Image (cartoon, rainbow, N blue to C red; front, side, top):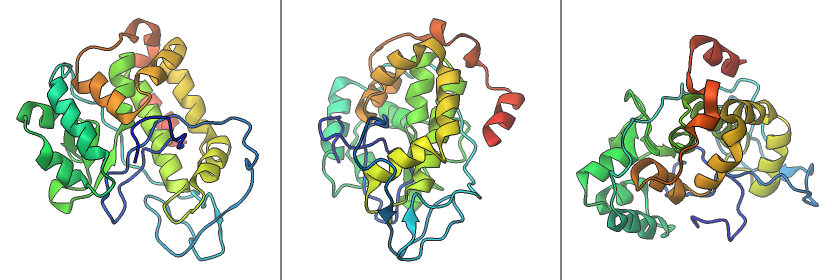
Length: 253
């Protein structure tokens, strides 16, 4: 899948599916005046991830996320900027451009242990990097952590948490069984996952626009977390920088 916005694909962080394909797209949900906005998308047989929802053939998408359960987000490591050289980022971009490549293929294609440690983490680790093995590297399954870029670019852990919580919500509401992903993600973003979107804007504050620009694509996110310095929005993020117990409780509501 493309790393850029040229193909106008919807935002999709999400959870890696059974195919383990390295499916990567932009972290921006386009909520413009789409002609199909509000329409129902068709679903077929399959299972959802982090959601207890019906997925029989003929049901509509987004699927129900009334019993949504998501893992507790963890901030990325600090001081990882510069861990990946431009040459290593080029390898990552080239490998990920191949739709037949998996997360394991990407891991194996990388040549720098320092860069690899910045890009990858395991779900049980203390910190989550841009790609998180779930549950382990041996499983081959992983999910994309757009929140790592948002936290790094904004200087706010809460900004990163809120963004990734929204990604989890959208991934659960629009699993791969939903054939019209564009419609599904737009509808979910305006309905079931709308509170998470509000949380993102509140947590990222005045820096929201700049952070979205910095984290426009997943490869942009990798550059922000592991490459050369891109921007510093920390002063704008202000009070959102601290992730405390009350914030975590709010996110669970």
